[in-house]
Length: 498
Image 1 (cartoon, rainbow, N blue to C red):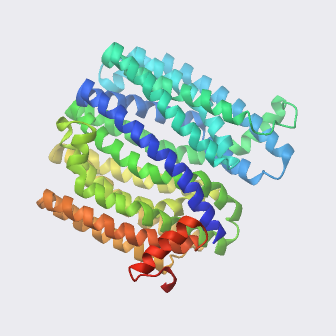
Image 2: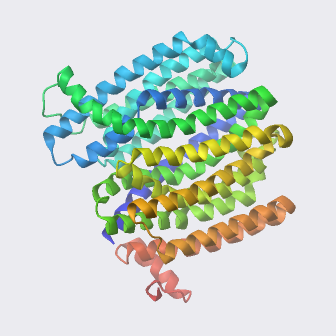
Image 3: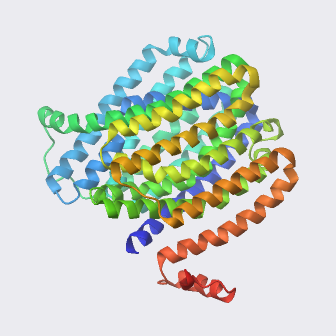
């Protein structure tokens, strides 16, 4: 019970921060859509994909392995101190190498992504953003590993706000040419704000390590992180490939439509996934060797994810055309269908997310890499063969199919390697949201207005059920929980009956 309350508390903190980030993102994207249209949104999407792909490769997964190392070394002050120092040094050196590499290859990268070299300078500036991103990652990795969830949430919100203001100002002044500054100022904001919070942590007790000591600590972190890096790179490289392929085949406007749907998909499911990861990952790392405890924690997290996130996904399926028009503009209408398909896929993503962390926590990097490659290769292949005959619409079903297969594979592996088993409540929540999501998608393709009304009713109903699940897992302690418990008792659905 206490573990569940801790998970919920962390989810509320990071979830609140993500809610503010979503609001900032809505305003930012809306302004960009009005000022620059689909082509501007598509261009920003390509810049971000390049940043994420090269940044993921340059980071060598040390952000992920660093969280694990810090979480598992919290009781050993000397070891923790060394890890912190190596974490900062590694990200600085790797970031400098990446920045120089991108700058030297800026003409070739521009030619590959855009078909000409006219964006070479902007590509070079993305290299600077990669260095800044890795330096920011070193700061946030430290906060997450130390389970400073509140500080992590504050950094997220303040950095997003500062980056949005500065980025929009650049676009207002320079138009499309100012888009690259969106990419640069965001990690710069993260560094400045995260530094304020990390300086409040206990100072390292060890002197600065020698080059030999750095190598001894860096090598296992990089070895473990490399497989996580390759898994993350599979996703970011796939997105970069997909955007580049769509741009060359259908033009920047089509890329803008894809980026709009993808952005909404990732933003709203990211609201929950970031909240889950912030405390769940280090918490799971601490118990991963205890299979019953790990299985319980994984089920708890999956249940909370579906109970809280499921109703929002149902609402998004039915209201997708209106959400796209509101948050972007009427020019982005084709993105609505992609968004609906991808949102159904995100039901499977929510369910599998908690399981995927088990392989990271257990340092099974090869398995994590296999899972990531499986999804991205399948998604890319469907898009590659389907784009010409079916157009951009194929990106939606490709996302759903790839996540269905991903979900099946991750279940087999979690059972085989970790002994994981779904609890009845987990299966109930999963089946409920899959069936409703598929039914809503079918209705939305036939009668959009009816789907919109139905989605509101279903979101309210499943939200009521999901809140009850959360209250059961939290227990009756607390003023807010007790108040909701009285409401459920008043409507004849008492919490204690389950």
